[in-house]
Image 1 (cartoon, rainbow, N blue to C red):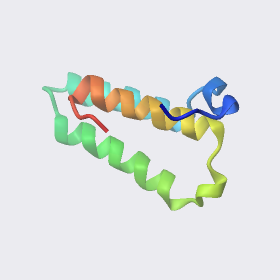
Image 2: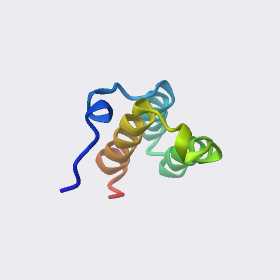
Image 3: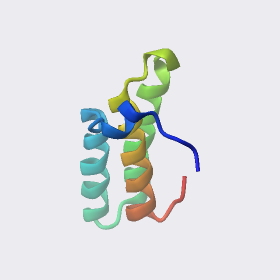
Length: 79
């Protein structure tokens, strides 16, 4: 298993990742709108990838784990 950086393991997820969780939940609640849920994830990923990798914070890394877990649990897609 890959060792995580200690500061990343302790960080809370970024607010943007929290919005992905609530957005995916809302889309699934709306008649199982999986395409809409994936659009929420795509928008988050596009915004995250628009910046430099050097600018990623521990909260961004924790947020990426939250988004990964959200997509796996709610959409059944393993990233």
